[in-house]
Length: 86
Image (cartoon, rainbow, N blue to C red):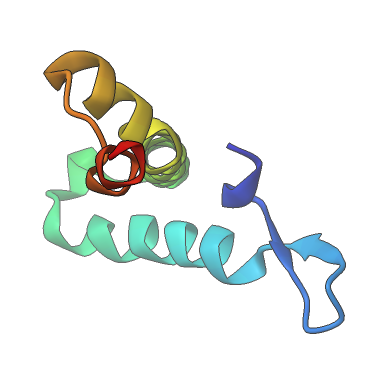
């Protein structure tokens, strides 16, 4: 979940992920154009941006743990581990 807000620099250190956060806020602001004037405003922009960042966090968790979930749910073994056993 941290990766939504931090990234690695070219030197390998952690830094604030300006591109992702500002991108979410920009998308939230642009989405105001498509809504009627009664459904626009700063609070709705912040809400939409927070939802986008939350979805990104959930997506990162799924990416991280999908191999384990897949193995547990579908009881499949990795082809490389099966070949190594024989």
